[in-house]
Length: 270
Image (cartoon, rainbow, N blue to C red):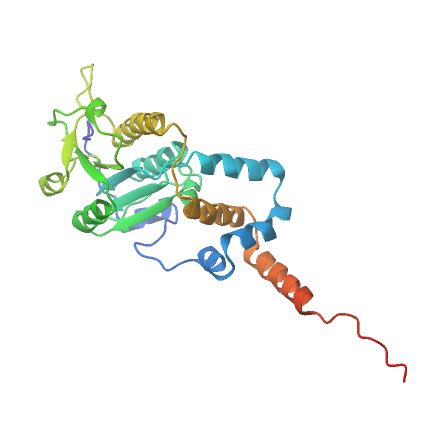
């Protein structure tokens, strides 16, 4: 959705004001490697003594409400405060994925707005729209663009299918080529003199309404597959504990030594 006023694009120097987001493509980090090596259940068991029961209950409650079937996509967002707000809204609404398309300036998020919440979601970064949209289509998502000229409303979206909503930048909105590559376009109804919402407000409004409709249809707050939930549970345990990898390795090593330790040997009385 377009903004009322143009804003200057950030320069490379502005990167200092942004959170340290993952690079466009990254290998599995230390936590992912730890889970792959030992399994999610072993990682959770090793780290459970280092977490309070309240913290574990909170992690489990958030996991139960995580939606993987409503996805936010933003293209060419260059205002760090909007970037941070989109990340924060995505996580707060219980959505697990945010896809950012970066044909020009690197997507940034202002410090103090995300408060580190990008660590709890899957942030996917793409150099252009086509591979992003193709990947979502391949996973069975219907992909809808946002456009002030669209006639379809939010109430008309079929939430029985996974749905990805694509938002353009603060000034120009989405390119025509991106809109054409989507399955359709939607517009937000506006009842005042203002002709457009701020980008981050648009994303929050749309995903909030769609997430509520999707949850009502499912009859459940979340829909992540069990394997994904187990992986995230282990990952979130580790993210809350300093030196988590070392704790897990020491615990596994100690249990392994216990399993292979020889039992008492009979005495030779001859």
